[in-house]
Amino acid sequence: MDFNELLGNPAVQGALVPFVVALIAAGLLRSTRLTGLAVALGVCCTVYLTIGWSFESMSATRKLSILVLVTALLVLLIEWFQPARRLLLQAVLALLAGLGGLWMTFGVVRQMESGALLAGVAVVVFVAGLVFSSAAASRDNVRASAGMLMLGLGAGGFGLLGASAVLALFGIAAGASAGALLLTQMVRGQASPSGWTLVLPASVVAALVPVMASLTGGVRWFLLLPLLAAPWCARLVPTDKFPVWIEALLASALALIPVALALVLGWVMQATQSY
Image (cartoon, rainbow, N blue to C red; front, top):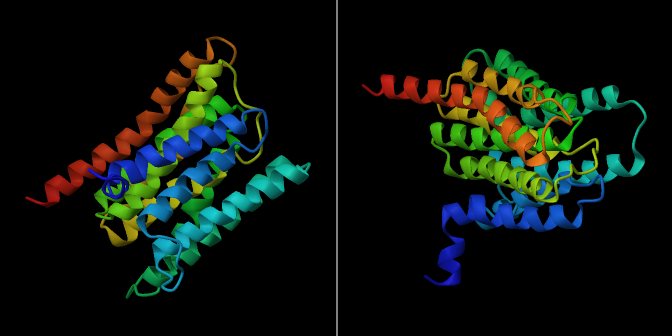
């Protein structure tokens, strides 16, 4: 297998490459508040390997790639200026993410014969809710990284349920990148500096991929709701009670519970409908 064939392998595109890129970036940024960039860089590499960076046709996947770039820019701006009102910033970022989700899905929503307005509102509310929940629960980077790891992998699973391989790879890339960031903290035995925007790139991808799976892939909308609990489940692990690597494993296991519940229910419903 030559190098080009290797890069064409979905496992390499969606997991290995973003993991390695994010691992290197996380190592370089370990003492800064810019670790959210590691996730954005990992997803950007998957975008490049799968659909490229041409914007001639503004499909939903290309709009998602633009939103990933925007989150990377916001990470730089927000961590540079460090606004004083954290809660207000989280609310504004969540609202912007929700509106970005509406922009991404607008082509699908407007074609609905009925319920287009309700679907548009639901997209904004869900995306904003997941981004806000992720940000509000991200006081500690170990738990935040664990939550984003499971949300990203869950988004990849929803992409597969929705029969979109590209969207699935985007979700897996977000999870793999967050996993790389988590691994650096486990190896060092120390949490990275707690910035404002660690979860922003991963949570945006983790929200938008399931939304598209619901709108275009037949995934029932209520299956997305357990995802909102994943960041809070990761936060249930008490601080300063265990070594960092144990905290990371416990937080990941707790965050996996609602994500796995949603995916299993989705798989069972699809399997039932196929008979």
